[in-house]
Every structure is written in structure tokens, then in C-alpha cells.
Amino acid sequence: MDDRAALLNQLKIDRSQDDPDDEGRPWLKWLIAVVVLALIGTGAWLYLKPPPGMAVTVATARPASSGGPAGGSLLDAAGYVVARRAATVSSKITGLVTEVLIEEGSRVEANQIVARLDDTNIRASLEQSRAQFDAAKAQAAQVRVNVANAERDVVRRKGLVEQKFISVAELDTAQTTLDSLRASLTTAERNAAVAARAVDVAQRSFDDTTVRAPFAGVITVKAAQVGEIVSPLSAGGGFTRTGIGTVVDMDSLEVEVDVNENFINRVKSGQPAIIKLNAYPDWSIPASVIAVIPTADRTKATVKVRVAFKERDDRVLPEMGARVSFLSDAPAAGAAAPTGVIVPAAAVLGSGEKGAVFLLKGDIVERRAVKLGAKNGADQTVIAGLNPGDRVVIGDLPKLKDGDQIRIAKPADGAAN
Image (tube, rainbow, N blue to C red):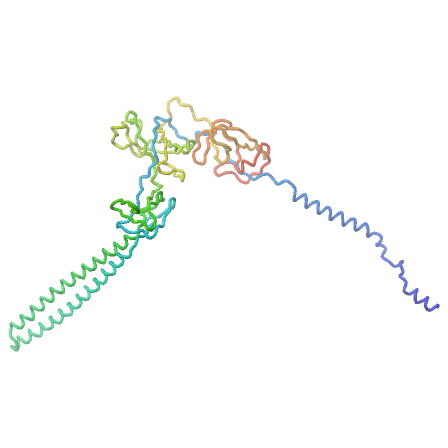
């Protein structure tokens, strides 16, 4: 029994030898839990915290007198936008349209292919002309060989005549034969030249089945479809067309206005002007007079005046209605100085006569109502509500409200920050 008791005592665990720090492990677990919760809270705060202020650009309002026309309006006249360079693209021959490569609004370059006509018959004529040319060249080559042989025969006969083996009459006959062959050679060579010209004509007719743009421009009308007959000489019924389409050189757009002959003395070539399109009444386009047409319309008692755009814009289209203000070269006597300021159009909310802008006050924006004037391209005239030097915000304006904090990304082009 004593041995068994000794063995059992050896199997017992001596608690006195345990790590003295084991009693602190519950506290360590609580510490780890607190650290994890702190990390989770920090991550949630970083994720849910409000975003920084909206990134915007800033522009400075400048006086409206800068860049504006110096003189007042002497005369107003109405007219239309016209293209000085426009053409109906057609083929030189009558033919069936097999391919059309244009659409309204598409841009074409000079000599670009816009359509193709059926070339089956013309291609056959071209091949026939080439075959006739080859035959004419072969015939000329044959006659050339006969001429060379006749020349050698004449030389031989001359020697025989000198040796008195043949008569002079036989030499004359050989010379006559040579002269006849030389004439035949000339005729054959001329026939070959005529055949070559026939090939050129057939080739030109074949090239005419490909319709090309005469100059660079924009297609405004597509007149023909595949399967229709195009005839440049006359307009038939049914599926007969006179052209493939109309191309307009947009760089040649100008305005033609009719000026009452009683006031034509107020207009001269090179005079500054302002064009306002009926579609964009707030857009003032700088212009100048190209020429006063030296003839009058007796039925309307008007004189036609051509006016050029100084700025090109894709919004200007042919046949748009326009109104032209002819300006004096110098400010009118006693005229009031221009009022208001000019800001980028992107800094203005609204249109018409009333709008709003956001002024920059430190890093806070202030919404301010303004009275709008004319719009000129990317510039907007503000008649009232702003002073020169005020800084306005450009950005996603509908998302801004009075008192919002913003951050400046960069100043607008040409504006001070």
C-alpha cells in the first residue's frame, strides 16, 4: 500500500510551481478587447467622417470695359447666316448609285470619296479601248518590220543597178514600195496614238463613276440613296436625282443683311460690328463689315452688306437668323462708360436677366444674386451684384449652398487666385 501511495503522490500536480502571472490573464483579455474596440471605432470614424470641402477653381471679376467694343451702335439690320462656299456634289455622268459614303452632319475632306456609281458598262468600254490600243501598237510594229525589210531591199537593188544586173525600173519599184510602207507606218503610229487617247477618255469616264468632295466641309443635305439614278443634266421624276448631297465650308460662314438705302452711308468696309443670332440672343459675336455690295434692290430699296465673324463657333449654322449692330470707330460723344463686370460663364447659375454666383470669402462661399447682361462666348457680363476684383467660384455649382466650406484646386485660366 505504501508503494501505491507513493506512486499516486508522484502523479499529483504541484500548483506551487505555476507561473505567478496566470492570475493576471483576465485583465490582459480585457485590455486586448479595449484595444480592438478602439481600432474599430477609429476605422468607423474615418469612414463616416464628412468629406473635405468641394474642390473648386476661382476666377476674378474684371471690368466690363476690357475687351468690349469702343463705339456705340450706329445702325441695326436683320439678315441671315450664309455660306460663301457651298456646293451640290454630283457626278459628271448619269448613272446608278451603288454606294453612298456620307451622312448629314459628317465632315469630309477635299477629294474624299462620297459616292460610287455603277461602272459595269464603262469598265467594259475601258477594257475595249485598251485592247484596241494594243492592236494598233501591234499593227504599227508589223509595218515597222516591213519598212526595215524594204529599206534593205532598196540598198541591195542599188548595188545590182551599179553592177548592171537589174534595170533602174526595178530599183524605182522597190523605192516606191518603201515609200508606201513608210506612209503606212506613219498611219499606223497615228492610229496607235488615237487609240491611246481613247483609253484616256475611257479612263476618265471610269473615274467619273467615283464622286469626290470638291473641298473640305460639312454635309448638310444627303440627296441620293443606293439604287437611285443620278443625272447632273436634268431632274427627272421617280428615282432620278441631280446630286449626291450638299457640302458647306463652315469656315466661309458670314452674315448678309439688307440695309435701307437711306442709311447706307453709315456703313463702310472694315467697320466693326456685333452679330447676335436669333437662337442665342445673349451672345454678342464680334464682327466686321466685309463689303457693301455696290448695287441696290429697287423693289425693297435696300443695299446688301456682307459681315464677317471674327470668332468661329460650332453653334453658328447656315440660314440662321441674325441681327447686326454696326458700330462707330470711336465712343459716341457723351456716351456712358460701360458698367458691370465680366466673369466666366461657368461661374454663373441661371440665364436670362437674373442669376447667381458664389463669392469666395476665405474658404467659405457666399451665394449672391446678380443681374446678367450679354453673354459672349465663354464670358458672361454681370451688370449688377459684383464689383471688379471679386472672386467667384467655378465648379459643381448646383451642389453648393450659402456658407459651404470649399477648397481651391487651382485658379481658373487667366484669372488670379
